[in-house]
Image (cartoon, rainbow, N blue to C red; front, side, top):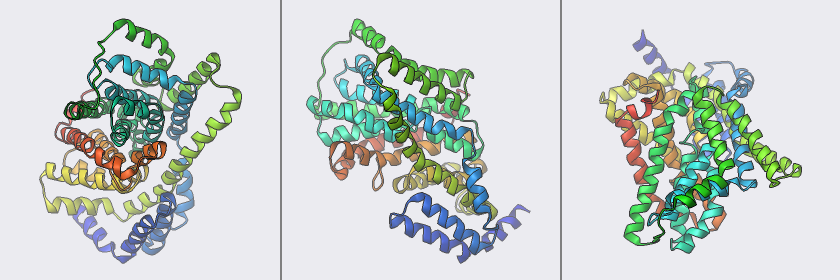
Length: 435
């Protein structure tokens, strides 16, 4: 019966399917907004294939965003924005510098650790890159780092924004595949830290070779304790978010709401923000959310159309016919995800590719949690890989440094992060042992 379904699906994937697909690729090349590309592609494919009624589009648009889990996305973004406006992000960096600043590559390593701290709050790599970049890049240049390298370091460290919980990407993939975001957050903790360590170690090695920075100040427990005390309110936020989720007290959405209220209370108590700042912060959060939500809404009818055409089954059949070696298939999957991450943002990649690749992953014996971790980590490398390289463009916009100059220095970080992806691929227990 399964073979019949695959053969029937394969026969139905004629030009009525491929023409809309080619049209979508052309629109992406022309620079049309992703949500519009996906929406037009979905509608065209529904009309040409006649596999489902076109009226599905209107219903699916509502169903795609009618989710309690999605409320967490703007709330985490808003928490990160409040953190920056209140100056609490500076306190996090002070703690990071007090913790790691005694090393020879102290400021560079502290910058990466600061990216990790901020990732525990905002869940967004772009917000991470913008916030940390404004604070640290000039200081890194003063220490002796080339400006383009400093930008690449911040861009690489900020990739943890989608890799360390609470990550918006894990919320979205959990929503698409029907997996608890809390479970994914727990599974992503160790892989996210490994990516963070890979960037730190790479910077340490490069610094030893090039001699950019030579921080000889010894570690001071007194200074570290003072930095932790002064940054106690900033450290409280990730403790509330992650502690509440992992302990089961809060859902991710509830923890995001509590984090927003807590940061606002701290800001008002310290008089670092006023009532007049709230509309600006809400506007910023709405703009970022306005980029993500339409993509999710438009992608759902496309995913349903692909499922009705049995595209995932056809893809599984094609791949397993090519080779039965599970590790080779995983390598192909990682290659597909990295290429996709280079040319398109994470959200559309998740909602389009996850339903197609998950059946293949399950066919070769991959756990669905392991698949999600491997997918998000592979896509995360795309944030520092041209031609899209979202983080590269963010730090370029902050500093005025040409993107290609930053890209040249980012290559070494891509290699180190890819090594972690290979480790995650061959050792599934890294993604699942906490569960």
